[in-house]
Length: 402
Image (cartoon, rainbow, N blue to C red; front, side, top):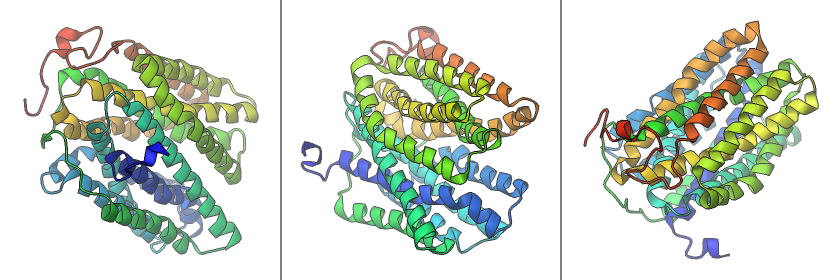
């Protein structure tokens, strides 16, 4: 297959790395609720605290730029993945509140650092003309690994009846082994451009920042409240939710690569327009849904729209100064997580009053994103970042080096 001809390339390494993360995180995610209740005796307050702690490294992802003063970006990505695997592998051995907070912090720090670094390295190494296709392939590879993680959980818990600690060790260990093999088999790839090692906020990237923030807000509606709706209103079991996840990832194997090709052919604005119109309809559907089957279909369609978000990365790659990529990826990850800190708490209070209102707010967010997406030019490039507001975008920086 021509894709793997001369396989020791940066693109192939990114694909393999994309499989390493879901193997451990998928196991952690699939077991978490059962583990914390059965072994750690968690209450609702405890799980809320744990999830808040999990988001702290995402909010502080900008600090990765300071670590890059000491460690090369590719090596730091390897170390971050190893930290993720280590945090997951240790989880089963610490069934206490303090122990779970510690292992979650280790796992989450590695997870969020890696996600920021992966985005940065991909934007630096992938050719602009076909990067969306590669982003789609990376999403598909991650979905395949997630399916393997869910299969591992089913096999080891249901068929082999292994203890939690051994399942967690298998999940985390697989990530560590894969990263070690990649580290040994692939060379250290040069960075095409020297990266700034300071925080950077530039006016001409304002549309990218806005789209990134809204993307983070929309993700929280799906991650926190859509799944909660399935259980609270429609009585979906753990097995039902797991089946939905499996269906989502199976569909993503087919859809994600084709989304990348669509973006290359029709442009970022077209892809995001489809995504945000679709999301507005999906969130409205959640608010009105009275059928468990209809809600499940909405949940699957909602998840599929995640793949459209690679258009935001593709757009940014075309407008960014190549020296800004690492710093901007770190800052944008923090921007994305501002919503992760605020929305679950605020919308959780709104949920107590009206669950439908949460999803109508989500539909409104999708429409705001739709409006923002219309400002993406047909041919985005440096100096052609937006259709409206070029005067503001012409300002060089809000913070950071020139």
